[in-house]
View (cartoon, rainbow, N blue to C red):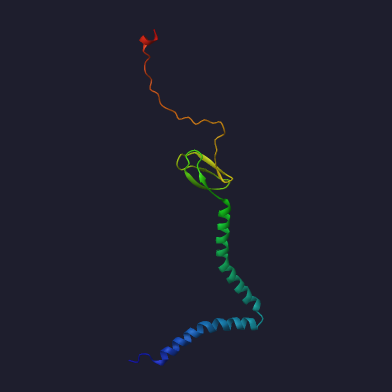
Length: 131
């Protein structure tokens, strides 16, 4: 057994070096024959590819900060979250709501009275009381 032989070490070292040397030589070759614009285009594309998710995330956070409204239902005071200029239904009381400005408004027109129907059983009128 020949453990720790210099041949194995030298092969590993050459493999590691070739990982860096080959791309460098390709870029140098393309630049030397006048294709530097191609190398620059590839590098710009890779840079944009890495920056796009960061810019999208920051843009989404900015947009949500401007358009997300947190408030309470005007009917039952349940805590709600909604986007500006949208309509939603309160999950607690079922009231249809519109997100306006920095709060929530009912969709029902002003002056509408909510009435809850109660079932009344029919009972015969006592005739002795009427006379």
